[in-house]
Amino acid sequence: DPVNACTTATLSHPLSRLTDYFDKLKLKEEGKAQQDFANPSMYQLEGYLRPNANSMINSSGFERHLIKIDKSSLKASDAAQPTITLGFDPVNACTTATLSHPLSRLTDYFDKLKLKEEGKAQQDFANPSMYQLEGYLRPNANSMINSSGFERHLIKIDKSSLKASDAAQPTITLGFDPVNACT
Image 1 (cartoon, rainbow, N blue to C red):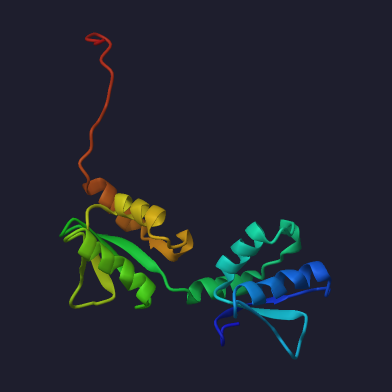
Image 2 (image 1 turned 45 degrees about the vertical axis):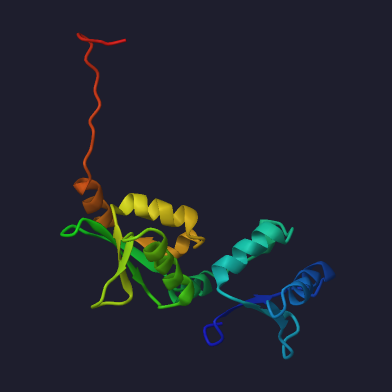
């Protein structure tokens, strides 16, 4: 639902095993799920479609084939979600991180990098939605994917920047010399 920025779940049959799942969400996580009064077979779930779908697939106990995901809704939901786009600045030899939305959960991550690791992240004064991160793109991307708590689909990596960053890094070439083999 693009108006309310929430996920809608429509039940094909009002079976108790289906309704019980959403009723538990209503009780366990206050406001997470709300039944539509006009259409009792529809529920509105707080948040974006992909994380809700993943949560339902992983924790509901429903077989995967019972959960149908509307592809156009998924695309619209993904487009509406806040993202971080990582790039590479070859002039300064650093990673750039551009935030699509200045949400606190995104800015807090970079503010912690500024405070915890002095100089690791610098906010761009000309463009406050951009941060410069010390180091090359691939290690920064891996670190962010593994330790930021952001879901992988929220972190976009510019492919040409990744190639430029990889090319700019110093490398070690290993080979084998059969004549002077060492033990």
